[in-house]
Amino acid sequence: MKHPYHVITAFNRWQNLQAMIDLLGPLNLTWEPIFDDTPENRDRFPKQDWIVPRFCPLAPEGWHPAAWPIYWHPCHCEIDPRARYCILTDDDGYEAGFFDKIDSVDGDVLIASMKRGDHSAASGYPTDTLLASPENMHCARIGGEQIVVSGVIWSKFRHLHTAAGDWPWIAAITSAYAPVFVPDAFVRFNALEPGRWK
Picture 1 (cartoon, rainbow, N blue to C red):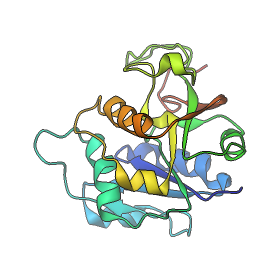
Picture 2 (picture 1 turned 180 degrees about the vertical axis):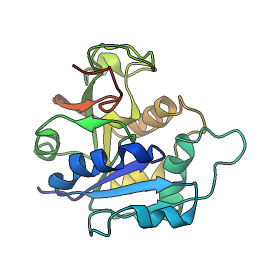
Picture 3 (picture 1 turned 120 degrees about the vertical axis):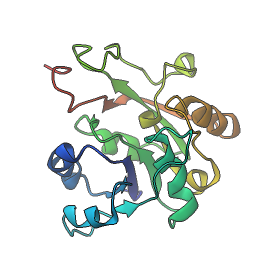
Picture 4 (picture 1 turned 60 degrees about the horizontal axis):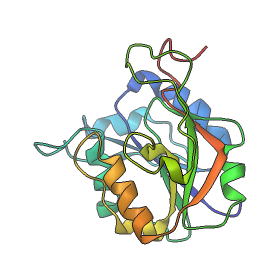
């Protein structure tokens, strides 16, 4: 690939650890899982060069526990300006060829699509596809997993404190930098959620 990739994950579903390793391991990227329960849990991750576990303090009062690590990361971790950065939650996935499609497109801000499965399952989220398009650039029609940005941009913008902090963060980035849409590259929303996918 032309670009190095860093996948940033707010990690607390330890039952999904091996599945995430199996998903991301073959993709030639750097995975940075961020956890906040106890520093000793760093040893639960296999010692492999492509996995860089990050321990961060517990979220301050008023912060959503999944939003806090995404805010914390660029404030406390070295950022590679040559790399591209993206978010993946600890039960999401990628369709085959995702990074090949993203890597073939130039730009500092890329927007991919996201499929959301076949059944709403326990989480209750809808199953319609969030297609990468200018028409879907508004709240509830794009998720943080869909945006891929350069290291320079990752270091400049901070995620907000709520579970819905994705959209204000994305809006700030795409107001400052014109996004490039990659509609045929798909994130798989809640790929590991029982009952969501056939």
